[in-house]
Image: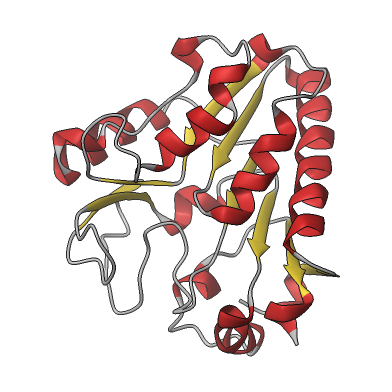
Length: 227
């Protein structure tokens, strides 16, 4: 991605990144509910978003207007501790009154192919999103889109095989689906991300994260990752 298309906000540490993300989500939710009477957000896994989710469970909002989606999921049994949906539920969603039928978990326990097809069928009727959250791995991957993996441009949701980190089988929203949003927020923290951040800012398109080119996007990044 051309770095000029993103707003980069450099913050002191992961806690500040998490807090700024929380504020951004709160603002986006209020705006979307005022305009459309609902708010559709795509969630990311990882430690930095987890801090944000811990803050969100205490906000004053009409939870019945929230619709939750996931950017990716690991093909593991339901409620497995390593699933993104489990982390989000335990940290946030189990503590608030979002209707269960508005929390759209990727059915990854069915296997990558079946789960991707089912999630894609559901997504066709809900796009675009109001806000997408994404993180980044130290190899430049985002969601479960990894370097040197190639996917059909026709798919909204990809079955993922041979992921370079366990488990090898996953499900991920496509680049086009992740970009089909009114706003996109990247959360990046940690010194181990520094080399990938530098490559990203140089618009090296071999990185999956460089392919994410939303109409509106912001990167919340801590000093350790940016320096």
